[in-house]
Length: 373
Image (tube, rainbow, N blue to C red; front, side, top):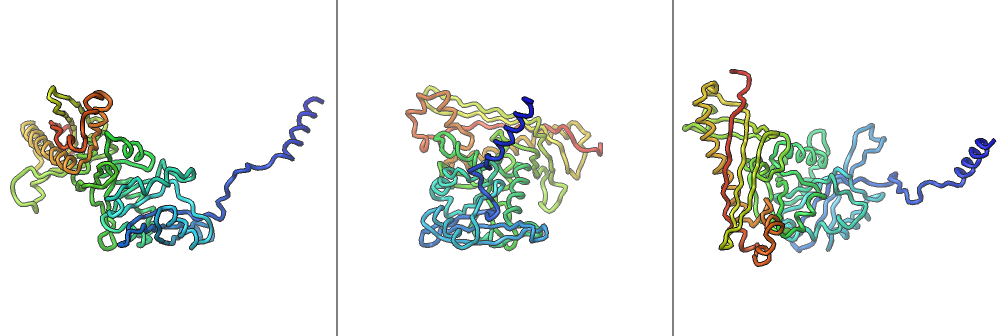
């Protein structure tokens, strides 16, 4: 009897129970998969949006529309686009944001502020990239092969992150270094060439402004130097004299990323000079070497020494570019704040960072050469 009364009571409660009062229906929402921002010649902000329609009426195939508008702020330009389309605009949690070079050379945070303040805007998986030229021009292409433009760019960036060509960054992970006085950051750098969207390299930032860039060839070593690598890092180096057209003069190898060792140490000398020791130990697999002879230990040792010297010189070039750009991507300032706060307080980091002495060593060790031998 008690069980029957309890069941009847629960049924009565269900009658008066409503659904979630703050549930937000997405039936009429329009999904923005990619957004791009540029400055007009008049200094206005131009926003371009890719809006995707993946309703069932399209027989399972998504379509997209490209809309743009100008305004004095991100929110104003978004609201103007909302006035052009049917339904509310919602942003995809795996989307992409592109910033043209004209915007990136300003204070980038000014164009991100509204995204962090908006509680419904996704951050944890949203990718960000800088575009050489106008970012909106990339979205105007609408699609590449069978992929809509936003999906194509996102997949391209994720793939190049896995190859250590780009540093891994999302809207969420960007905020801490952007607001940290002792840490700078870098972002993927893209460009449009004809109908192709290519990797231009890595965009370097000082504070919140785009100040320089590394090439795609420098990307994998830079990512390894930051200590935040992913699956693979491939290098092609010329190790024999002769024409560049001869494949036998080159060697291609991949770092065994799970075994890479990186050591960074910051030292403050008595005279206030900052010295940084940055060492990398790279065990590698040779994936292409037409001259072979990798069963010869003496030849392997010669290649190890030669590649170590080449890679160390490459690392020194990367550091020079970082210092010339004022980009403290390794967080040397953060190390000083944490371990030498008294020194940090008396420093003008904008002036002192370019004078930091880096002592870099990259040691290459060939540990695999395929199945030929």
